Image 1 (cartoon, one colour):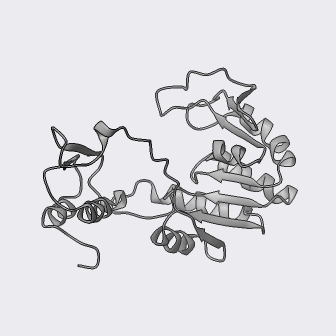
Image 2 (cartoon, helix red, strand yellow):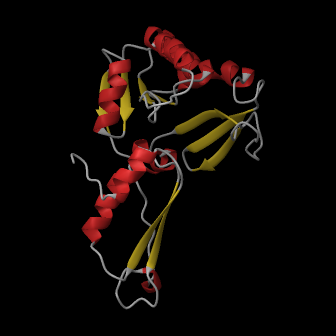
Image 3 (tube, helix red, strand yellow):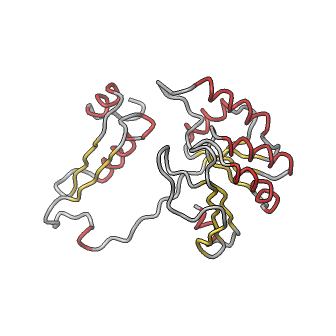
Length: 232
């Protein structure tokens, strides 16, 4: 997303940390801006408390927000998100906020009390000029229920399709079927039913096969095995 914004002529600066999950760091130089491409730079701030807090990031935040015409915030339940909303509100900067599904609720969701606390802080600190960006109509409806009064817009994720050689194209002349693989949690949030709908559009035949690999919701899995479709 950042690379394409830069290609369109925007000046993009990313402020983040070097966190790469709970037990690892991104192998990059930290605490200075690194030029990634024309119009795009990233500063990876070192973590003070792993995956929780970076004092370097908090110290750099005001300068970055003051420089920007528009601020894009990704994620919900994190200290940088709350801090960024507060700074944007104080400096009067417009915000695009992409929760990436975090504001949706699913069965067995973890830490509901902590999440509610973060949501209340976000509602209090949110600047007046802010749009909640979601990637599906369902996500927009559920997210706006948790953030009432906010403006919302649905823009699906962009997908870059690689150029395929003749040996990769879907055709009955292939020596073996084109193998498609899904690996992940078997849960409605993953949209596996949409994948199956797409496969139905392609049609059956010997030219391709789909493998689903994962564990998860038994009822949803059974529904998929029975050929479930949206709306019954």
